[in-house]
Image (tube, rainbow, N blue to C red):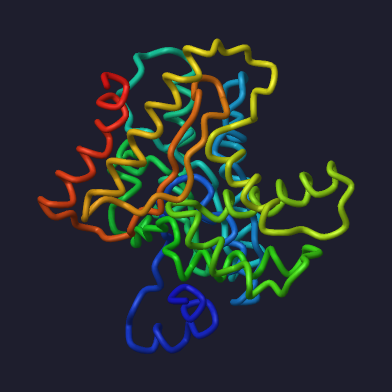
Length: 317
């Protein structure tokens, strides 16, 4: 909202002698909505939005990258005030001096140099805000991060339970459910700790696909649970041949996790246990409902360790 206010009321800041920030770096894990946030900022402020991926600047021909940077900013200045969004900026913004002296690396550095000049160099004009998205801010060149270029670093983390509930409501409103979306949103938010917005969209889509494959008309909680299992564990491997001894060993192992967690006070609540093979390596798994606390006590750490080792202990018995 800060940049929206800058773009809507630039005179208010210029009257006080303040300079509007040139750009902001959106940092966060994949799927958290960095691109969507940039689009929302442009839409809310009512200014033109120009988007490009960092890899689009890089070509096999020398000089193409810097030329595209100049063309992009020239177009942005012509329709200023405007927003330029560079997705995955780490493709061109890596710290210089790494990766040897190959021709491709030299072209990337030339592209980065041109970007630095366009953002804060001679001949630049006001009214162009640059937003960039990356999930690797630690490898970016320090010249990009200095004041006057990317003045702000905005961390976009995975949503908490309240955020997931709101995201679920948006996607559930588009589906044909057997009950109201409010019935599902809170339950599904509790079952998906650590999920990003893209993961939530994938779950809702998978639930609809599962319902269609079963020739059913309405999506139920069972379909959502199957979708969550598929997203977490991967595809169910129905053609995997497992001997009775292996199946018994897997059952003992997963039961050990469940029994140990039942008797431990500070262990996470158990949601389900399965010995159905999924994904590339999992022969079964125990799913818990983890808390979203940022700190862990000594007792919690000890109980979770015991619960983790419970599977191996059950096999020995």
